[in-house]
Amino acid sequence: MKKMNQRTSQIVISIIILAIGVLLIVRPSIAGSALSYIIGGLSIVLGVYGVLRFFIYKQTASVLTDFVSGATLLTVGIYFIINTGFLPSIIFVLISIILVVNGFLFIGRALTYSKYKGGAWWLNLIIGVVLVGLGIAILFFKDTTEPLFIRLIGASLSVAAIVDLASYAFGKKGWIITLFLLPISHKSIIIIV
Image (cartoon, rainbow, N blue to C red; front, side):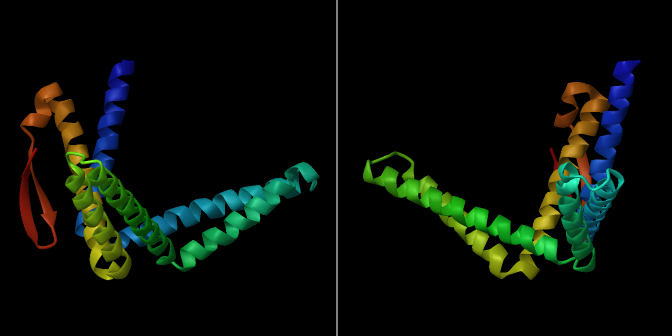
């Protein structure tokens, strides 16, 4: 019985992940707003809890941090809900910075390997240049790359969920024969996993 409940919950989670993935593919523009509303709403709830906790426990010094963190979370949550574009833009800036830094690390590694006649130094160089290029593209061409990036995340979630569902339906060999259709924009593509 316990194993059946666990299997059922895994199937439900896979269906939810699949629905989120398809939604991100079909409507990438709502991802940033939804993320802002979810994180903003959670911040507001936690903020109100922290402030109320301060007043309920007679404003003692030990719960002063609850008031400070609660008021801060409340403020941040309200800001995220009012400015829904702020959080996604920060996330994309962070992603682009991480890509550029990792790209330069790969380039530095390639230069080091080439100095010592390392075998595949050029592969590190290519990866580094691609990562730096992607980071700069995401940073400077946000309007173009953001929907593409969100669709890529949606496709990854969808593929993972479908593989999970196929493995539940067909056993461990199910992922080999999975054939599905993903709508992307107004076109459709068939992916065989």
